[in-house]
Image (cartoon, rainbow, N blue to C red; front, top):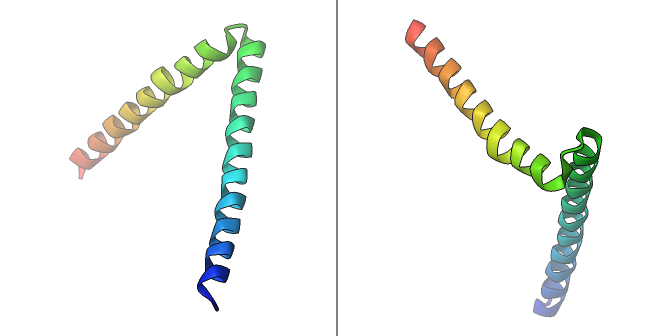
Length: 73
């Protein structure tokens, strides 16, 4: 396989993966907009609630529960 063929195949794969990431990102944005509309808080506040408050809170909760179980053993 020639160098140009490899470069063309790699370029094609990068474009395909980029397209998938692009579509997934905007699907996630649409979900956040939908959540904001359903709850009445809007896209920005839904984003903040989920990724600034809920996600870190869940991480801390699971870390606390894991440490608690670890101390029992």
